Figure 1: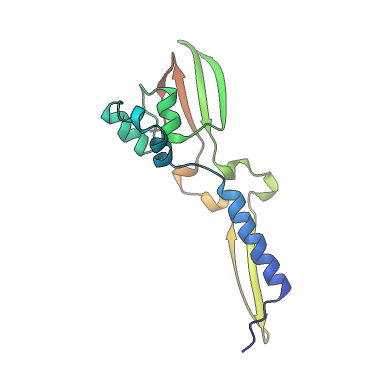
Figure 2: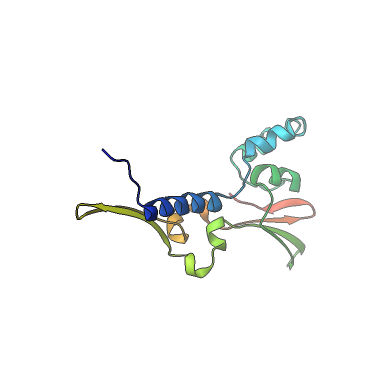
Length: 152
C-alpha cells in the first residue's frame, strides 16, 4: 500500500497546525505563577490562595494577587466612578481579538480516493468558543489598590 499524501493535504495539515499554535497563545498557568513566587503566595490568607488556584479575582485582592491568579491583563484602563477613580484590568480572550473576517472562519482538511471524499473542519473564530463562559472578556476593577469587583 502506498503512503502518498497529496501536496494540498500536507499544506492544509501544516496550516491547521500553525493556526492551532498561533491561537493558543503563550499564556502561563496559575501554578507556574504560584511556583515563581511561592514564598509570597504562602503568606496570603487561605481564601485568597483558593481564589488564585481557581483563577478568580475577589474583593480585597491586590494587583499582585490578581496577576498571579489570572496573568497579565490584556488592557488597563483608568476611569472615574461615582466614588472616585478606578483602575480596570481587562482580560480578553484570543478569539475576541481576531479580525472580523476570521470570526466565522473554519479550517478544513479533506481528500478523496476513488471518487469518495472524506474531510473534516473545525471553527477557529468566535464560533469555536460559543457557550463557554470562560471565553468571555473579564474585567477586574481596583480602587485604592485592592479589588472592588472581580471575576466571580
